[in-house]
Image (cartoon, rainbow, N blue to C red; front, side, top):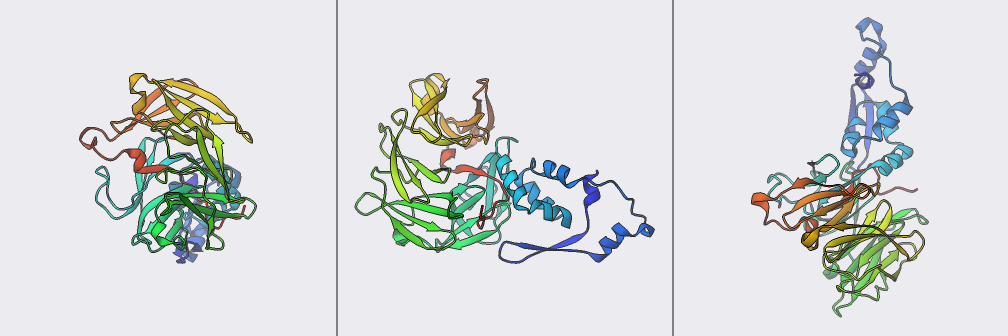
Length: 384
């Protein structure tokens, strides 16, 4: 293959802070340059063509390809490549518990476990650099997790393993709750918002900047949030549904302004309703009688547009919206038998793609085990 003609023998050294250094073996350089050694000069691919090929590959493949040779390493680690690859990376699910707790997963060492619906397969990446407990949030390819003994938090890219350690909440007795990650485009840093239940029964809130590594208390939302909900991160803001069913409001916070606001939903919330990222827009999927209604918010407005209605008959109430594809053309649903289905919004076709039914049908609901994630090369120290 022409791609393999680019390969040089090299060594990569892990520096301990999540970064790597590269050095080429002198013998390999001689082999490539000395015609007396009989190395056949093959045509090489241009950087532009390699760029186009690489951005279409999964992150877990790219992170290995960067070690093939210095040329590939330099290309893959440019900011423009990381950004373009992240924009094309599709949604997968990542398991919240890193400890082996799922009957489908072998009792192996703690690992990041992914379900990839685009390729209808699952895969794992061992978490051997440090002991982690459970993942609390995901955004941009980064995940926020507790260390095994809950002594600190780790913001890490599971693919590259580049990470930063963060302190626990201001008051560690409230360290549980809902966490959300977003990027502050003005401050050029990631921020994490933590929602929890105060002793008074109301929501407390705090925020930390990855740059300063200091938690700051915030005024919490006026409406009570279900802290078991996963925050949806879009456009520098985090969004949660209200705790009480029958309410037609949700809560948002902009990580730069650090102020919570309540906004209207297009319909009252029912059980198993979800907010989703649908093609880069905030979506709301609600159960109405025998169908699922999919709504999408209008950018820079509090108005909503109904994207479609999905008639599922009497079984509609058992389906849970899980996530949407990156381009917003498809949505993943889970039924009560823990079978996953993909619904295409344009042609209405719905197909089953993944199942852990049968003898595993009594396991915990998958939407409580996995959260949406994208495998990218993005780093916590991103500045643009």
